[in-house]
Image (tube, rainbow, N blue to C red):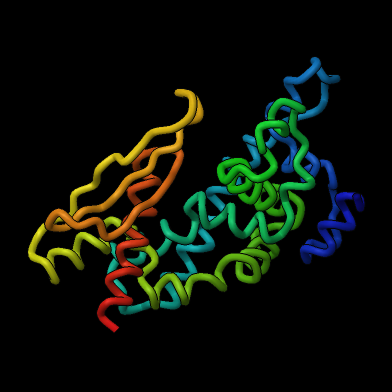
Length: 234
């Protein structure tokens, strides 16, 4: 694997002054805790805290300047969709963050390199490291290139509205009823369950989804239902 500095340059982060900031950004708490590693190694949670604040400011400023006619409520919703765990994890996954994460053997064995929350946290931690190393302008450039490019699609397609809300609005418009979600099955041990949920309208199943929680499975079911209704109404 190439060294971290070379990887950062591929990401567009050049002229790094203090590589230790970025080493810390790619270090999960479990790595520090495992085998009582030597002192001086810090995990990335403090940098994540800083990066979260930097990210919120950059996205807020961009939305404020780009959509002058949008009300505060919509801007807040667009920002939430942009910085939510799933969005940040998707970007971090595309950029290959997972392969550079330092974590314990146990965390890695359970798929830690591809976990949404770890990848999203690392995205924020890297931004915190970049802020300390090069300042806010470098962070703005990075976020514009890696994340802000997603915002036009989020706004145009109203991806800030979650699938359950979208389908509920559609169901009330088309069928004059509120969707019902039913558990089809639960599989796996308590600490690692997979739920299968179906969304029902007037006794008819319109979509089905799976997830690690009922909420996630319901969102998948609602997404499937939206696609089904869209296909039927073409």
